[in-house]
Image (cartoon, rainbow, N blue to C red; front, side):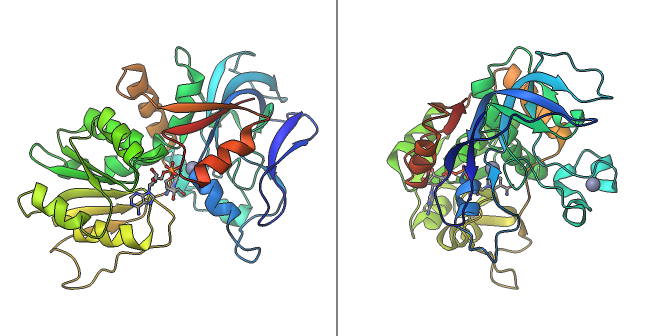
Length: 344
Ligand code: NAD
Ligand code: ZN
Ligand code: ZN
């Protein structure tokens, strides 16, 4: 089969021919119908060899959806042809965090060498994908796989982040979304569906801010050195009760800290290498800072239910497998509006 692989440190991804995966005992193979392209892949492909946490090559794509194609011995309860999405942050399945469905926070994944598909293990940008356990598959019956596949990361990650701040996002509150790309434009919709908060979106691109407005942001602000002052102005000087930074680079983490209100939450999701220093006087009183990772399996099911209720509509641009390298080029250049999705 054809697969898009990251094969050599620093080199662009390559479309190659690899053997079709065969399910071992307890495993499942899906025929991929849609696979999302995430900026984290670009961060991974920018890592020097001594920092890259997993061996090469591997097939890219940590957002996957498809239909069940083959079952390994011992797998029951899944019908061939059933439409499914892949829950990506694989864990051991048995530690205290995994027992709560929080495989994203598995206590043993590192020690056991368990890696997410597309981030070390072979991922979804291929004709077929090996899934190590049926518990990592979530039914998507009734949903369009193309617009649904980004919800497994670009939906789940902001959902998990927003859930953490729900107690603060009461009527009259403000939420700031920095970076309205793949994750950010879904975050705006989730905030509108889950909270009564006023949503202020920040980006450097006019196209992305137009999308932010289209998907429900109440205000848009150009992300520059004056952005935090503008957020204060829009909030009567108080700042935002919750700030979600989907860039995470030094200029945006500085903005994020500077626009948080007293007892506000600052959540850094982007991998841009920025930090928010916490110390007396560096932020408003009582601000909490966190950097969450992905989300739980239960939360993925909740996000999919929100999609079924019509509360989220991911904006996608689609590519064939042959054109998949182009999707990465456009994402790298900041040209993708919404999420790029590969249709193998
Ligand atoms: P994306 O490229 O689709 O979106 C990024 C957006 O940020 C774009 O709209 C871009 O114009 C905007 N941007 C760039 N610089 C900016 C600035 N200075 N101020 C404001 N906006 C700016 O990326 P994505 O796939 O949505 O991923 C977003 C980030 O989240 C990436 O860093 C990715 O690695 C990370 N991520 C983290 C997790 C996690 O679990 N923590 C999960 C998925 C993705
Ligand atoms: Zn991702
Ligand atoms: Zn575990």
